[in-house]
Image 1: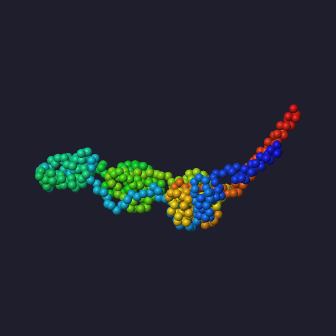
Image 2: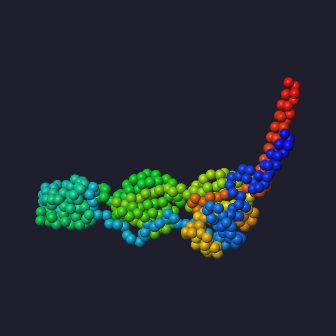
Image 3: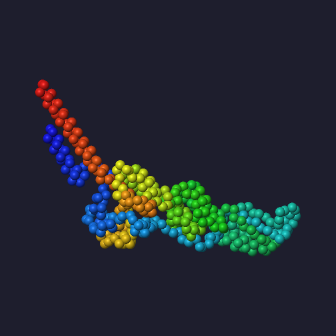
Length: 400
């Protein structure tokens, strides 16, 4: 039995030493990542890889010079320009208006001769709603088209129609409620609502404010403006940073605020593995490591802090990397930081993270050795236990 245990121990040792595959691991080792990279910036040699080809790039001062190019502007658009003025607000169907008619003296069509004590020589007609046919009704003037016209135009027409019946009539039309000049604000706002526009002109941020502001983080929220079959979309923090994006809204516009969570994954020898939200506009690799609980002293290899990302081809070209082995405008890249170098802590604080990045911290080689020794010890203990059980069973059979 002791011979059997020794054989089992030897077999296990051979398997473990042939590639350390017998010990558990939460991901690839730093050596495996480096050996299988199709292109390496650090050592110009390339290796054959299985599956997806990728480039390995060390994070250093040369890379930081192009740091802004490591992130893409996917999903970012423009609402246009705010140089154009506020849109005009003509009358429209559904608007509630009030008509007041003034005459120069009493005794006319609307003001009787014995008017007595009055605030002035005018009469205020009851409020009325502009109908679906777009008209209003004024006594002695008849039905008048109002929808699609400015208030001043309608006033002038009413005055002209009453000029032969009233004494020097003057007409004032007041908007009580403008249903036709509204903007709908929907989505991730605190109070979705319809905002009534005024002649002063309201901009996108005014409308969002009227809806109670955003209910989601600025950096993760996109604002979409729909207008007459066209759509424009911009991230909210860009809208805040660029006044030119804060355009005037027009009647019938729909403003939609939508959150798109920006997240990254952290695996390996970090304090916490899982998915993490950015929750801010700009997140660096250093801050991302902090969110994930940092590196575990008992496991992590500080020389192998790896960040997986699809990077623009232009970035690798600027770094002098041979990209002939890759197709397309986006290339899989593993960015590596060596935190054994004190200066690397400055670098990771300047290196920007991107939505859907994957951060992986490799185990140190010593951890793999300890795992192997623990496995050997476990097998040895098991073999000794089995041998003792066999001896005990044999003695029992002899006693019978």
